[in-house]
Length: 247
Image (cartoon, rainbow, N blue to C red; front, top):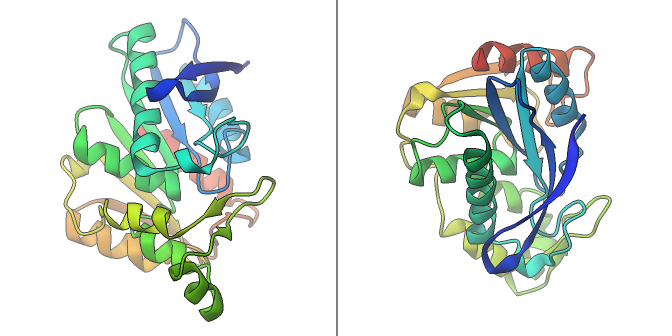
């Protein structure tokens, strides 16, 4: 049974978390959700069940301004998102010592996972990326039509949210453009596995293909799958690949 807990990050920002760790676990998976998602992701929930069958715990949290996070959009920055990962890693290392630590990250979470990996390459023993938004600046503007793009670049905030509003402006765009990972080669590419839907309508599969080819990263393209993996059997394939990667 996963427990809801509250952690504190830099500047006393509150992190709303789901802790699925337990004494008998032999490893931990830190799960990072995507843009406008939350820690109650159905895929993360399913992964938690699959991993528990293998005596592996899971831990996840809401990004600032996401899910149940009490923090507003001004804290949804690259620096604070990286700090959230650092705070979660520190909590897990302090509590569970030297257990292997893995990362399962989706879309925007994949971008954040790889940015963290670039700066802290020894943190995660293995990384599993599901449809990662590695070329995040282009992914963000890919949601916009011509008029929205013009307004956005002229300073208008747009709502990227679903259940909860998520107002992002050009400052957020400039922030992620200043933290490019797509053109950089990660250390330890053998630690990384990418799965991407062939028909992804949010993050182009070609982004993952080029990144994997350039850096010698294992990639599995799931035929017929879109960004949400809605087809029968799609999520089961993700679980099978993640299980094999982490075991």
